[in-house]
Length: 430
Image 1: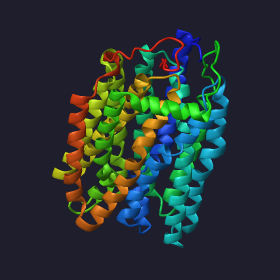
Image 2: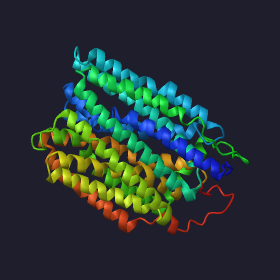
Image 3: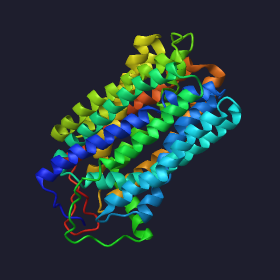
Image 4: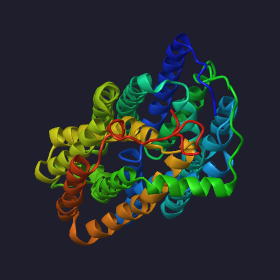
């Protein structure tokens, strides 16, 4: 098991480098975000509500399902930094750049082909993200002691969100200033450049030094640790709350379409993209608060705040049209995203009942994956038949139940006596 040999000075250095890298990544992601830019682009290319829902399904499923392979083939080890950086440059960036080429060359000439290739390339990109994500999360978690990890994640989330806020304003300006399809092509080219720059900021990070790294687990051992994670009652209860909250999240993928419609205020494409800055601003403020709060009282508090933010976002989008409502709904969605980034991740780290944190992260995501794939597509069908207003009202029900379940049935890991013994295969990761 990797030893804790990163000094306080190194942790400060790592916090700064991680935040700068995430800020650049957040800026690149904000230029092509699946919540505003991609849905509006697919709509511009003649896409249906189901295809718009498919964007969210691809983003979730592509991220979650491939993680099982990451746990089997990319286990913990020293010196992972360069592998992770080069993987981002060589594997993840080409499909994102390919989207720019597809939009530029086919956006006006053959919209159906452009839609199909766009969704295919987006799927490839998200699959490459999903494959590397547990290894990346486990690597970053090892850079910080548990006592400061929440604050480190808070700074990272703040930087990502601020980068995304700036990107949303830039993206809105580009969408207005440049004619279609060149405007969207420019966004994805610029996003690719920012993704590449992001990885450069991680180069100076100092990794922990091994003091007796444990041998790699066999595939059977990894699956046994999946089972050990699911045997933990509090962890299972937490997953129930996440499943309910996920079941209620479907309409979020359609917020941009909601506010472009006449009933939502008839906002322009450029205004909706620019108002997407409220999402990352909300993520910045909420994530910073949740990280510090979690280090003090436990990360369940941030998870509860994130679930409450989703309930409020759905209610605002349902009841109030117009620009101010759009900004408020996106800000609340951002708070929910911050909870997933800061509180949910740390909650997972602290609930791990054994020595393979990657396996614990993976089994959580595999349980959630079917819901995250099915819910947006099902919501798209619902909206296509009945409209977005019934969908918003219906999805409030599981969101509220999920919030209540989290409040009542789930205990913060810090209050649970896990009773592990040093040297046992059940010894949790720090």
